[in-house]
Image 1: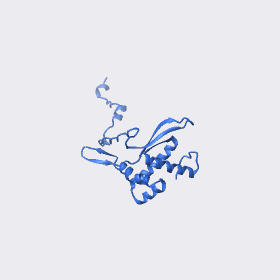
Image 2: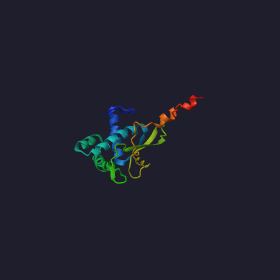
Image 3: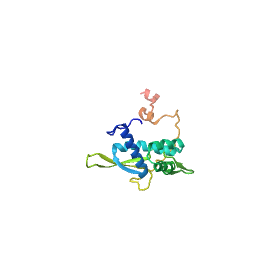
Image 4: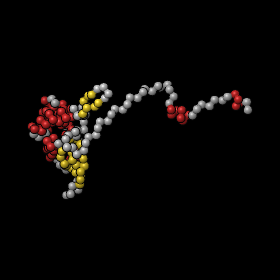
Length: 175
């Protein structure tokens, strides 16, 4: 299972808790939990969405082995896979093409401090969904293409620091 936070539980309890929380996150698309648990759930939820985007029978069996419920597996492989496979359209001057989100399917928003034990709480939700708490940032445009530099041209830095060349003339020698 990898390097995870202990969360005050042994391995079997921790695995059971993560399976349940990932299943509830997929089902409801937003849950409130502590910040430490949200960070762990985010890792596993992103892995499950990645399996859903894969769409193979092997990926479906791997996802079904982790999440709880056939309805959750169905939602992973239909609704969420479609949403993140075609998450937006980037328009260039000539061509429109679909952006395939490479990761970061979930967002964690810190909300409050819990009254009983002062634990920091957070919402964890899927990005690009209806009724989300905060809108996703727009995709950053690619940087403009730079003109290749001539390796033999003098740089501005060398001109700035070295200063102009002073040549001796014969008039100054005669004085």
